[in-house]
Amino acid sequence: MGKKEAVKVAAGFVVTVLLLVVAITLLQISFGIKKEEQGLPTQASAAPVVVIDAGHGGMDGGAVAPDGTAEKEINLEISEILACIMEVSGVKAVMTRTEDVMLDGEGLTGSAKLRDLKQRLVIASQYPDALLVSIHCNKFPLESCKGLQVYYSGHTEAEKVAETVQESFLKIDPANHRQIKKADTSIYLLNRAKIPSILVECGFLSNKEELARLKTEEYRKMLALVVAGGILGVI
Ligand SMILES: [Zn+2]
Image (cartoon, rainbow, N blue to C red; front, side):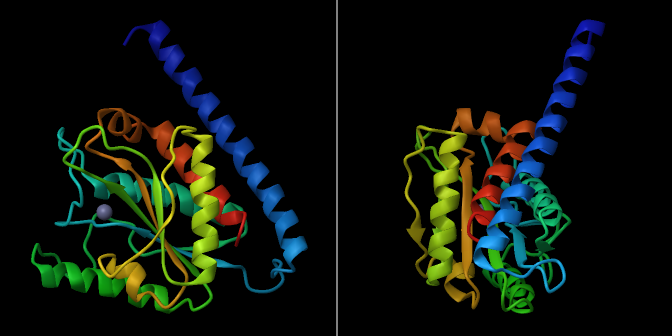
């Protein structure tokens, strides 16, 4: 890398960090107003809680892009950024995993995956007043298939959060016309969760355009910010 490019990269990084700080501050301000309006607990009492679930992990890579990029890595990074934004916004963030592992033992069998999902539900069940947010990426045989989409559990609150998060996606992709969808039995986590839960599909790894975006640090930060904005608008 030449000196000029190095300076350019460094400048780009500084701009990204500054934008992130400004965005977080704005979220804090808007969340403060929301808390007052809705009479939600202030810092003196218990903070609202979000359980953030980075989909897959360990031997379960989730969807894998044609170039080998595994969904599990993208899910974890977006989840970690989302957790940071939640914390600075006064919301307690609980992660179901912070490492590249399956919960309750590694394995590629159906029963290992089921144990993993059950363990995620056990963690969520420890926070009966929380919102569960599961982060995933999609894949489809048709390359042209793309877009961001939010699924929700059968709780009224979950539908509301799903709507605001889905709407907030228009800020990063105005052409994204996907609609929220109520989870059926095929989405085990949302189907079994006792607390309001949403599952965010952050894009298709099988679509070249979305894969290229999802592989960049900046887009992941932007995605986390937009999801956070949607959650904070309701929580
Ligand atoms: Zn997934």
